[in-house]
Amino acid sequence: MKKIDKYIQEKIKDCDNKVIVITGANSGLGFESMKVLASKNAHIIMACRSFERANKAREKVIEEYPKSKIDILEYDQSSFASIDNFIVKLKDTYPHIDALICNAGIFHPEIGRTTKDNFPLTIGTNYLGLFYLVEKLRDDYLKDSKLILVSSIVYKYVKISNYDFLTKENYKAFKQYSLSKLCIARYYEYLKNNTNLDVYLMHPGVSGTNIFTSPTSSYKRWFKNLANKLLPLVVHSPKKAALGISLLSANDYANHTFLGPRGPFEISGYPRIINLRKNGRLDSEILYQETKKAIKDGANYVECK
Image (cartoon, rainbow, N blue to C red; front, side, top):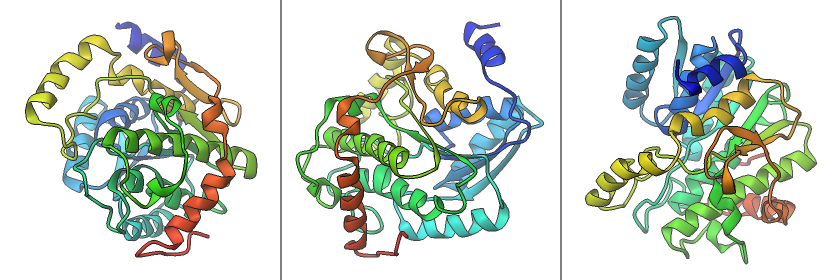
């Protein structure tokens, strides 16, 4: 047995048919966490933009774990209308869930692309869509559920000087991605301090997922091919990177736990409890109000609260 499989067997508890929703479950960290949680008897709800890609991922997991219970709901985090439709179907079909894992996101799309609601695509998908989903659910549907937010190691290396990035594409692609992940960290901080939610945060370190090679990535084909070959040689595997999600979903951690890799500089390694850096704690209430204002002033606004 491989070391990581032994870790999963020994460290991650059985889920006993817990209902767990994973956004972006068809690839990357979402797919890896789905596999682990399915092996632990969770009932998985895949919230994915493409039913076809989601079903292919579902079939792969069921092939490995034939007793898996996995459903699919259409969910496009770049569209408030899609999120609204998802919420209706989710509530109608599943009166209670045990955990919502907010994992969906994109990286480095083409410049100038926007969400269905005319926000910059990266910030609109990675943060505004997540914010919109959670705000719609948090006062009733999530009050007895775990909320697990997935950030990134890059949150530590960016600052917010003003909030124009919420509505305007004023920064290069990587900075937009970094800002979106910092916003998720600050949203976690806001929820931790201002609500009664069981809210958790994790970042996966640096991993060889499909983040560079996904269909939405604007990188050249030669770079995607190179990244696909080299990344797995120098960073930890998606399977290991996703362990924090599975641990927070299945195990009994204290509320507000933040998990990240235990290795040097939090780049790789098995998960451990870490502290949120200062820039993740700063001005979380200001960001919250600025986010609500940005969504309210947006093209296709639907009241969050």
